[in-house]
Length: 347
Image 1 (cartoon, rainbow, N blue to C red):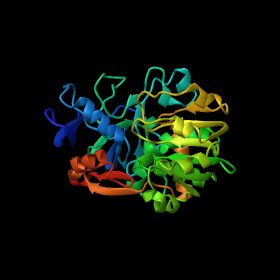
Image 2: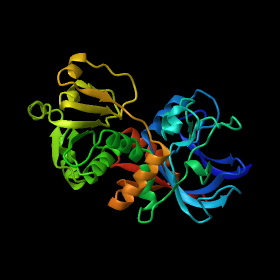
Image 3: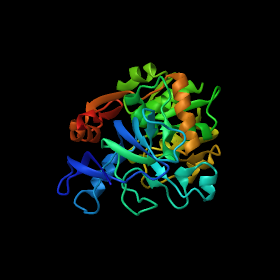
Image 4: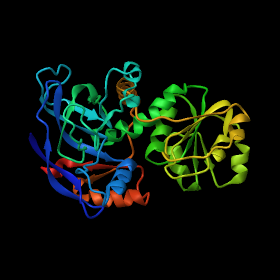
């Protein structure tokens, strides 16, 4: 086993503490990555809240990180020591089911191995995430970080970025498409950047006008205040695609009303139960879809697209010693628009 250090959930509280961690010895197709920067995702909060006081194996969050290759297994062919790489929220899949054969490892029928709190398919151990100084991962689920992308600001692309990229591509967003983005947070601000770069006419929907300037800075063509009934009524049936990135429970009907004939509402932010009135879909032949993470080919394509268009996340970079502060501020939505931890202080 390999020794490293990271931030682990305290059994009796919601706080993370610095702790020694063990990584597996390299398998033939593995690479060892020195984690340089790791994004802080809302799903980290959910995982920590679910585990608090519940016992179980150690929990080390973090599933969107960039770093440097420090060692390679004997069968690794695509990476060498010193390469800059990125790792997302999936680190393995069965490789055999219909979804894996379709390059959609994120929908693996046997369930993909998650970067943290997942079950290793080879030895049954629990995966420990990127809030650590080293990660060992198969080269199949490691991505070369394109030149020109800032490693810190690129880290959130590996979760938030790919989560919105796949539905944008699946729904054919491009020139001539009218897109609305509901919610301007970690997911939403990257949706705006990607939709604009794809050539879509892009509008942001937010609860208040205080993010209007940010929406314009990100490239949005329009801005709607969701609490303004007159604005929302005037926008009825306007958008071919509405990407809903709102993390809290909310009424989908409000946003289905904005979807044009044969258009789609893609609900990405809230992963809990929803209630939909059939008539909200029926009138206009509207569709409700969703998505989660992305396959290997789509992730690599997203990184290349972001490099070509200069797209990274808007981040606040913090030393990893402030991880608990970052989680608390994220819990109160006090970030524009993604926290990233600098893991160099773990040396």
